[in-house]
Image (cartoon, rainbow, N blue to C red; front, side, top):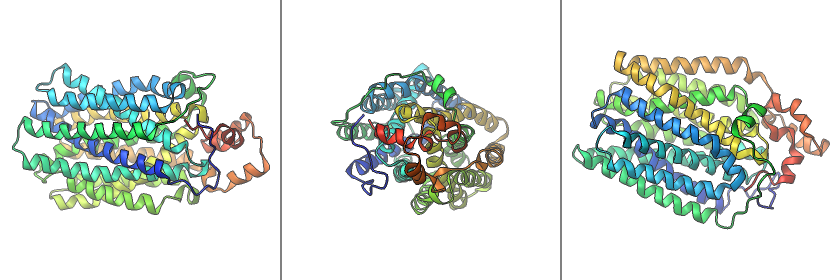
Length: 443
């Protein structure tokens, strides 16, 4: 861990380190958005929608298996080593897509490498940036870093549409598509090496396994919300391209452009909502956005009709991601923040893993409309569950009590978790003195 401790009210949040991480994330998400056409590759190779879902699920199994060790490895060895290794794995997976000419074991292995590398890259990026800011601004910074993803989604989805339009159908389309992902992954790797140059890491005295930490610092129903986020990702990033192809809608570029622009604007304009309306309410509103967006998608019959569902889905994404990651990872002490972030994001992958083959089977058997209704109904169910349970608990991000804790309880003990941690969903907020002494969990 580095020795510098961020001041609680320090204005030096958006430094060169942040903007370099922002640029890296744009490159990564652009590369990832190009892979939204993966289901098209499976169809080109003779596979069904269910086959595409199965391959994606196998990739998620690989990523989830790696997560049992990823968080512990970050806590033990530091962000730099795991970040660079994940980048290499991502590039390897995308490169393997270029060599795939059938639905053989190679496409499964390639998807596992790709998904595992991607999981590690996103996790390390979030751990790196949130550990360098005051506790009460973690949600804000996670959200603003995430806004770079919307830029990448716009670039990647439009570029993907252009590649498939400009190049005649065939293997060359996918070679250019995934070849561009490889190039962007290489750029990302270089930025990470520069970004983490000189980073130090103090290894904790103990690095328990992920499942032990999960049981000890269980984040609560926010993990159910993370699963719903995974269902939403399966719908938009795996099957939406096939929906657009079936209805001759001209591609998915417009959807993801509107999705990203609306989400970007909302993310910036609501960057302090965690401190005003609170993260729990952000989650309820975000789930409502997904519910409405998915409900509207079956009615799209022309490309311009993507506009309204894209706005609602973008609204949901903009609010859910920073709130879920902040609450989920904040349930773990700073020395285990790598594991906490990994577990929280891992439940998003659980959502993809469980839903992709099911949604693919629904499409094959009944069509796209029942599939969209299923995902919308699940979002509504999760929203109702969260609103009736966790959303009723206090959230110190928006009560102003955090500063009072620092002034009146300078030596809050670990026992405070029994009072605040369970109700607030955050060990951070229960133990501010411990956090500041440890440097906020920085690598």
